[in-house]
Image 1 (cartoon, rainbow, N blue to C red):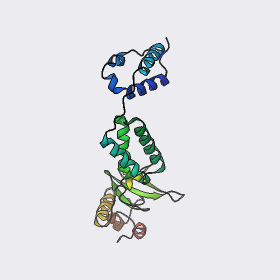
Image 2: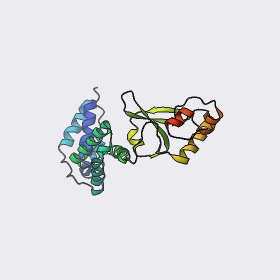
Image 3: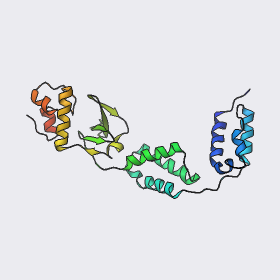
Image 4: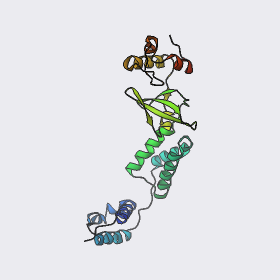
Length: 216
């Protein structure tokens, strides 16, 4: 007994999605059609192809969501921009997206909401996490997220970071002091702090100078 192929399974899913209205009515029995074998899958595909495709009815609210994403695509990274374009193309072709695809649309929309332009060494509060911006050896900014006492590399998080808020002034001083008291490490470079003045500040003299902060 031959099992349905992956290609058949994907094709059946596409056919069902394109015929949702009809399959909720007079053709509902097709949704109960067995697909345990290659032959049964082929028979279902043949039956579904005979069902007319639903006329495309576009929800204005969904159209607006896609339109906003397209308008803000320049704020995305190249990879995210390509993904957003693929979602928009699918929506324009079918007039709808799956629930999972809409979840991706919402995630990308968050990334387009750039509200700051952090530079190397800036600490940013974004979506419930602290991030610090570093530069790669090629001079490209990347983000690390604070996990406990460590800054952990967070690939592809820069668009998310740019939708956050740069931590400065008294807020930065309080955050650095709390970190120094807890871990005896510099909030910026994560090196151990041995000097009491550095521990109290949460950063050392060198990092204070690099970031224009008071020390000692």
